Image 1: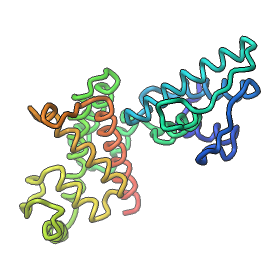
Image 2: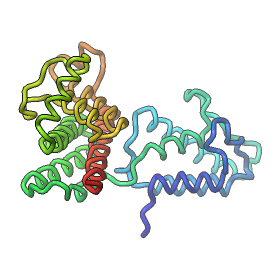
Image 3: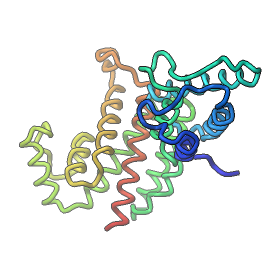
Image 4: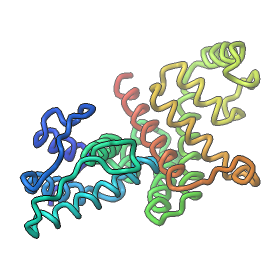
Amino acid sequence: MARILPSDVVLLMDRMFPGGGNVGGYVTLTSGNLTEVATILGVVEQVPRELLVLSSENYTGLLAAISALRAAVGYWQSGDARHMLAQISGFGGAHVLSLIRRAMSACPDESTASVTNALSFIEDVELREALQFDMSAVDRALSNGDWKATTVLAGSVVEALLLWVLQHQAQGRLKETAHQLYDKGVLKRNVPSNPEEWNLAEYIEVASTLKLIGTDTANQARLAKDYRNLIHPGREQRLGRRCDRGAALAAVSAVLNVARDLTESSRIS
């Protein structure tokens, strides 16, 4: 059976409601839209759960939109043509279809488990297999709803991948870049010459400056770093933040983005 991807849902929605992805582009849904709504609902529900890598806000919006569409389909199928649907309260006036399109646009088309096969650029077999094992563990923890384990493991994979790519850069180039970032106040210390003695924040900033990872990837990695830091004793209570599903998904997204960027850069080189 064909696998339905988030991007497939976006394409379907744009075919059924051309221009609807623009702000205010979706019309009020009525019984005349029963076929389109039922089709979109059915396709969305076929997207594999492991691909729903979303922030808490987007995930909540997606669930609310799916529930609203189900209710609307029920009304229309029972012959109630008076029921109409557009915005859902509590989501800033966003149209119900906008919530679904926004969520699907934010989801990856491959899971962490799928990415484990994309580490062929790492020639060290032992390291590659260790990272593949860790990435599979991330996928299992996420599926089991173990948010802290997901966040910690995903952060460790991001750290290992960034360390690997930095170790394959000229030492002089690394030292000069790190020194410049320290002078600008981006790095909090003048880092040691050996990257193994750096921390994740330093890996991210140097890798980003050297264009080894993209801007969006760097931002996602910073989020993963911040959420992983919540695991430290007392920080959750002191900062009033929890390591929840949103934190876990942010860390998983960072893994996917870093792996993708390093895969693409290895093809170019």
